[in-house]
Amino acid sequence: MKTILKTTDLCKNFKGQMAVNNVSLNIQRNSVYGLLGPNGAGKSTTLKMITGILRPTSGSIEFDGHPWQRGDLTQIGALIETPPLYENLTAYENLKVRTTMLGLPDNRIDEVLHIVRLTDTGKKRAGQFSLGMKQRLGIAIALLNNPQLLILDEPTNGLDPVGIEELRELIRSFPAKGITVILSSHILSEVQQIADHVGIIAGGVLGYENELRNGENLEQLFMDVVKRHHKEV
Image 1 (cartoon, rainbow, N blue to C red):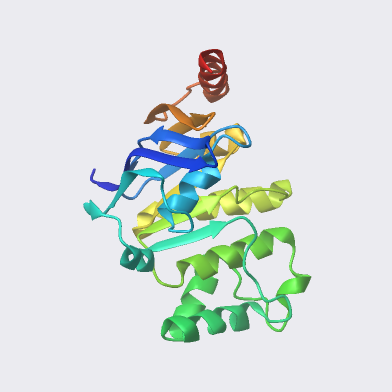
Image 2 (image 1 turned 90 degrees about the horizontal axis):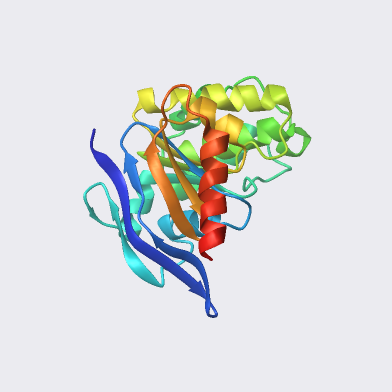
């Protein structure tokens, strides 16, 4: 399986504080990669560098076999933090704003609404949506440009069990559609059920990266990596 995204010794320094320290990720094409770590471990900072929101202090990012460049963002979809919704618009209208901006055909709106199962929301405004529906609409926006790579930062935050289950099924369906997913989370049980590979970041350092094996005790692995790193600090 070919690597779609690779970071080498990626670092981000904020005023002398090393938030991300020599992180080297290897993301396999058409898989779900779970990026795990406690709150404040450096997960979001890493994802913001991959999506061009932040500039790395040092290190490199390769996308699809070449050095990352801004043009690659047409192939990368992302939902980082809160979905960027116009609350007074319907799901369709929210997507229409984006297709107009991106110069995409309107039939793409129906395609992504179908993928995230929001075809029957009609005239209901996004402000009246449940949290799970808002998250799914945020993912629909990220899917509009038909990306090869989809980055989801803590997508199940605040969702009820039904919303989590729906989102889990949705994320698992993406690799078969040719979409690679990086899923950042601190909820281990979620990642255990979704991911093919995991990376564990603690204190800005990637302490572990490997395929997720059946029956593996992810919680124990996570705690070992986090404790080991804290001892080193």
